[in-house]
Length: 88
Image 1: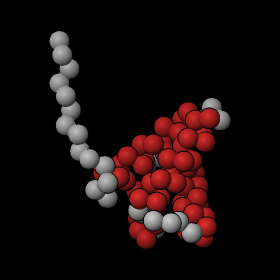
Image 2: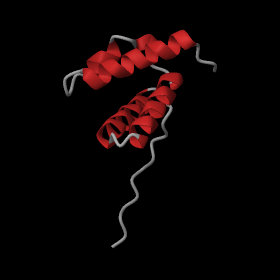
Image 3: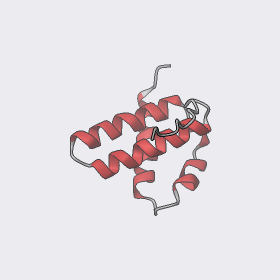
Image 4: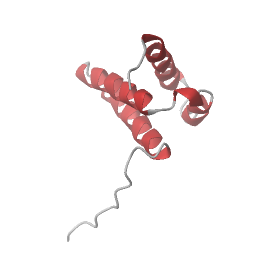
């Protein structure tokens, strides 16, 4: 899937909204743009998270990775991996 520049900009706008919204409001922000919730958006989130990590913004990177993981699960793009019990 090729992402157009216009769509990429829409993804970036939505990521900005996620980063600036009050804590806990992320689902509402995402629900306002269902047309953008796809594999391309998740890929863009992870690219931004990588940039944040390189810039030393670990909190921002962790936040975006968490969003990407949860969204991937909702969209069925993230395999549910059962928890392996810890060996004693």
